[in-house]
Length: 192
Image (cartoon, rainbow, N blue to C red; front, side, top):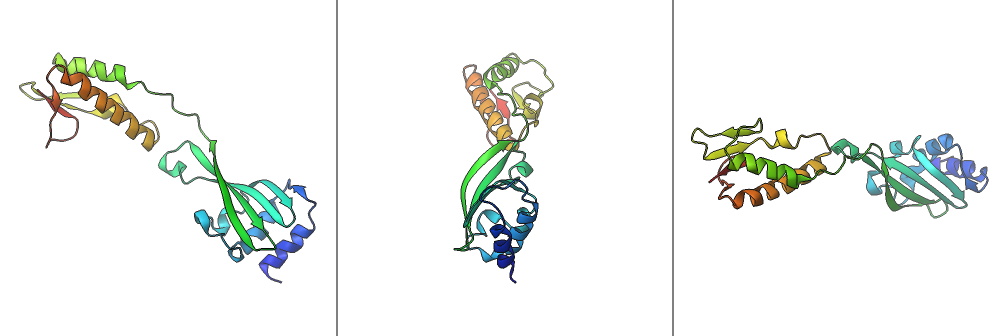
């Protein structure tokens, strides 16, 4: 018997409806996975199925389930993708129909950058010292260690957005006092 025949035999023994225990089913489906057209979508390899099927429903000849994927979490995301799959056992097709998200960790609270930018701009305009500021000898130029103001304690995409919004607001605040970002220098260097 082939892997797809083993899968069909197993499914024929199931009652239609929700499948509570998908352990053996996930193993059989992973072995037959390459035989389904469309199974190579979204980099869903057979090994990603075993033990990870959720919300499994058998409505002959269609099997529906979701798989939690963690690609984004490797990049710092706090959410996992849920891919909804529909398998037609007779047609030997696999179709990923939908992507949803599951929050795995608490989201970072929003960061209001305007007050931060205003505070740092006031320090720069008034020539004050701060752990985030490195002044030139004549105090006409300053380098801002932005990580001291907006630390890397969040996912990469969130951090990039926060720092960009902060920089844009800081430039706006400094412009009114004749300060600007210096080109040709390291990033976050300002002068008047």
